[in-house]
Length: 346
Image (tube, rainbow, N blue to C red; front, side, top):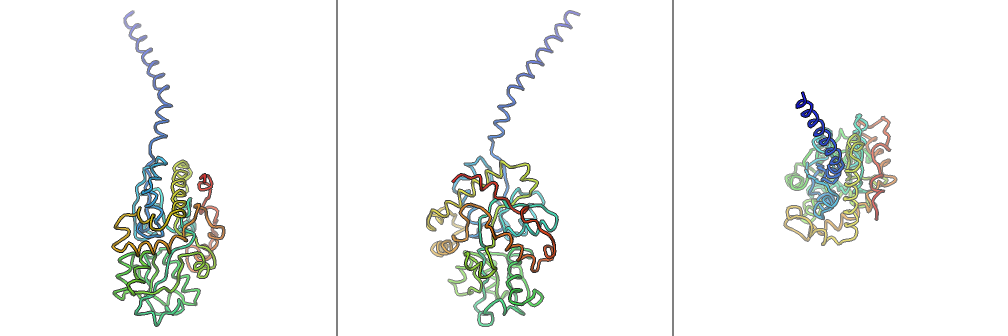
C-alpha cells in the first residue's frame, strides 16, 4: 500500500512539473510562432506585364522577406482567372484590377483591395496597322473583332465601355480572348483581331515593329481622364474580407512591403529598375523595355492609397454595361481600405 502511495505521489509531482514546464515554455513557443515567416500565395494577372511590375520587384528587393513573409508568386494570363483562384481558396491574395472587387460584391462575394499599385489602367487600345485606315476611333469598331486578355477580364470591361461611349453596343462587334504578351502580338500579326487592349511592354513592341498603332492611351492620368472621365484605380492587391479579418498582421506586412516598392519606383531611374528584373521579363531588347518602363512609371501610386475619385469612376464604367453591377447597390466603402497603407511610416 505504501509503495502504491509512493508511486502515485511521484506520478502526481511529475505531472505537475510537466504542466509548469509547458506553461513556462508556451509564451516562448508562441513568440517563436509569431516570428515565423507567414506563408502567403499571391496570384498575379500576368506577372510579366509592366502594370504589375511592383509585385516581382518587391520580391527582388527583398521586402517580403524583410517583413518576415514567405510569399509565393503565381501567374495567370487574365485577372478573371486569378480571381477564381482566390475564391477557391487556392491563394490568399490577388494582384489584379480593382474593378473585380466591385463585380464580386454585386455577386455576394466580399473582397477588398488593401494596396492600390496603379492609379490608372495602363491599358492601351491598339489598332492593327492593316485596319488603321478604317478604325480611327472606337466609333469605327462596328463589325470588327476586338482582342481582350479574357472574357470577364478588365480589358473586356474597358473595351465595352469605350465602345459604348462612342455609341457602339457590344452586339455590333466581336470580342476575342487572346491573352497577353506574345499571344496578343501573334493575334495582331495573324489578322485574328482588328484592334485590342494590351499593356506595356507589348505596346512598345507593336509600335516599334509597326504592326499596330495607338487608338486610346490610358498609361497616364491625363489620358485616362480623357477616356474615362476620372482616375481609374487598376492594379491592386486584393484579398477576401474574411481572410483580412483574421490575418491583419499579414495584411499590414504586405502593405509595408508594397509601399516600400512604390517609393523605390519613384526614387530610381527606369534603368536602375530594369536592372532588377529577370531576362525573361525584359526580352531581347533592353532599350525597348526601359523605354516602355519610362512610359509606365506615371501610372503607379506613391503611397498605395486609393485615389479619391477612383472607386466612383470604376463603378460608373461597370454600371454602364455589366449586368452583374448595373442597377445594383454597391457599397464602395467595402471594396477597399487605406487602413494598412496609412500605417506605413514614410
